[in-house]
Amino acid sequence: MIDADRVEKILQRILEAIRPDQGKGDGFDHILIALEQALAFQMVQLCPDCRRRLARQLRADIPAMLTKAADLAREAQQEHGEQHYRH
Image (cartoon, rainbow, N blue to C red; front, side, top):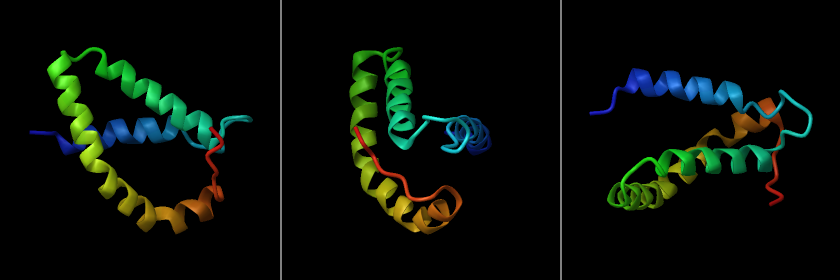
């Protein structure tokens, strides 16, 4: 079972580290690529079967992530402005 409090604490640390307004040049594209690399780093520590299961779970979670993003978009854009992915 996942410890929701622990997940929330980790999430807050990650969000603090990736705030788009904290450094020149740290645009959305750089932040997203860094997150992808961090996820890949964590995945290499798993066995091949676990990596496949995690990849399947991530793919399955994408629709819910997009729905949540749409729900939070107005608030995020007011705080950080509209971001564009340039990769």
